[in-house]
Every structure is written in C-alpha cells, then in structure tokens.
Amino acid sequence: MDDKEQDEEKELTIHEVVDRLLTEDLPHLNKTRTLIFTLSADARSVIEHDLKSSEGTKSSLGAIIRSRTSISVLFLNKLQYLYMYLMKFEAVNEQNTIEYNSFVIYGLDSLIEQMVANERSENAQERINVEQLRIANLIFNTLFRIKRKLDMKNIIITYLNPQSFLIHDLRRLQKYWEDIC
Image 1 (cartoon, rainbow, N blue to C red):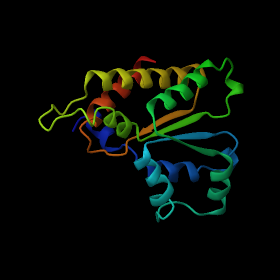
Image 2 (tube, rainbow, N blue to C red; image 1 turned 135 degrees about the horizontal axis):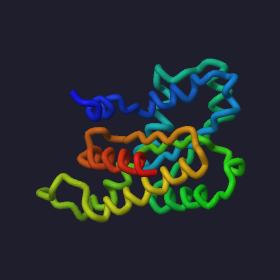
Image 3 (tube, helix red, strand yellow; image 1 turned 180 degrees about the horizontal axis):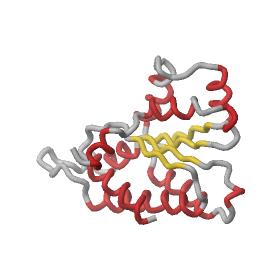
Image 4 (cartoon, rainbow, N blue to C red; image 1 turned 45 degrees about the horizontal axis):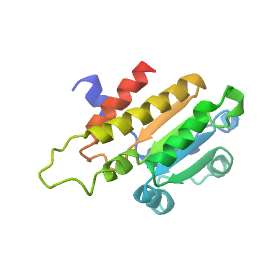
C-alpha cells in the first residue's frame, strides 16, 4: 500500500473531527476558532441527531466550554451559499478581521452529487462530470487560497458518504489544490 492509499484510509469521519476539536487543550482555547460548514440535509441530520447521541463525543466540562466558545456550525443546502461565504472570507484584507482560523467542510460530496442526480441515467459512467468538476475546482481553489491568504491553521474536508462514486475524484482534486495553493 502506497502513501496515497494510506492517506485516503486515514481520512477522518465527522465524529472524529468533532472529537479532536473538543479535546484540544484548554490553554489553546482562544487560539483555535473553527467554523464547520455542514452541507446538505443529510449532513445536517448527522450533525443534529447522530452526533449528539454518539458515545465518542466528549462531554467533559472542557469540551462543553470549547463547543460553545470556539466552534460554530453553519448549515447550508446549496453550493452557491458555500461559495458566497468563501468569497466573503477571501475578501477580508487582514488576518485579524476574521474570527476563524480553521474550517471543516462536511458533506461537499452530497451536494455535488445532488447537482446531477436527476439527470443521471442508470448506465451513466460512475465518474465526476464536467459540471461537477468545475464546481469542485472552484470550491477547492477558493478554500486553499483563503487558507494561504489568511494563514489559517487548518482546512478539513470530510465526506458524508465515503463510498460515493465521486470520492476518489474529489480527493484527487483536493490534494491538487492543496499542493498548488
């Protein structure tokens, strides 16, 4: 197994991402502010219902304080809305004017897949199409430009359905833009 395959297997689920965010040390509490973009109704359902009842989710006093002061969740049902928020962050001139230094994007695969769900036929090729590729490139490019421009700590992209036909292509695009920007 090569390094790329190991990286893909190590991709964190949203449960693991939230656990990591909640268990950061309290002395670093003011250093990390995270905005979680939750994309699609399915991703929202996981955040609102499955995550609350998850055994792995931390419930310590520190985790509760951290979740209320350093983590924000934004629910969006359209890629246009995600792009508008990203453009707002990109338009910021100074690093100090943005309150977040970490983004989590959850469910991007779901919204990109929904773009053409009605147009797909049963025998359509199980690959990303031109429209999906264009949107994914636009979003990844913008995300990683923002990270570089604002010197953000982290951008984590977690997919809702790791078995989706889009995931392999989306991971390749993500890696490309991460390396380029």
